[in-house]
Length: 423
Image (tube, rainbow, N blue to C red):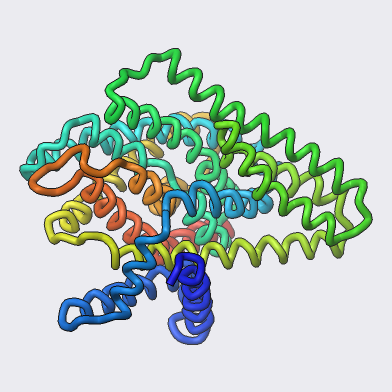
């Protein structure tokens, strides 16, 4: 079975799980699909262990034929970020712009260093002599909150507007910062070149600022075309060109496609939607992109769950992954708490803001895609390839994040909403 047919089959499985979930478990769709695919993976692994199973071998072969890094970072990410950004309220975003900017940049960097140093201490204490630079690399890939996982769960739970826009806005923007940090440490770890301040500055300007400016350009062009069109189908197709041709062009220009999609999505969703679309077309636009978002999220999270089939699982690596969970959460808590001590001197915030931002700072496919991009055979520790170790640790953290954090964030949000009503 080739990769395309396999993805088509997985799409049906994901939709079936989502459909069944409506009547049985009634969990949030993303959590249900991820949980279901993990259970399927464990059953397949058990079958393969106790007997020769052709189905397991076929699925494993098909999964290995999918380049997860390429599929997500160069393909699905553009659609998911654009769809998520369409729903961002620009007025609320402006009101929280400093908080979002500081957390997207400062909190990501602080978390990277905390995770790096703590994981270095833990791994060496356990007898895994991983150099500090490689621990920093793990810190860089696991610190940014994943916009796909966050938007798929948080926006369904009706969080207070001020908290919701912070979580969504930070997650949409901090992946650009995280990718720059990851790329810099990656170069230091694997190319043997020491990054300079000038080099890092140029990378940030070209990648991040270039992506933002390019997003403005394609948004303005799309806005002009939509406003001069009288055909609702053409208007919808123009928006479809943004995460397809626009995202591809950004990647070819070596600028941040994700940031371009976020900027263009916010512009189309807040400006073009009101002046370029009729009332009926606005509803069509929302329904279309909600459907695209739901479908791709379903496909992505069943892929995340089924990755367990192809991962060379060892109890030692899985155990280290479990021990990393509290370290990542502690780093997230500290990196969020520090700026909030300053924020609260100037504004009043929800009493549960730090709890929601910490527990709702989910990790997902982006972290796995970055982990998968680490080359094999470069570093071997205790008989394990560093690539395999990082992918396994990242997988454990991501699964915990989506299933456990995602399913238990609701009571905190409900408590926040209730206290807000009583004030």
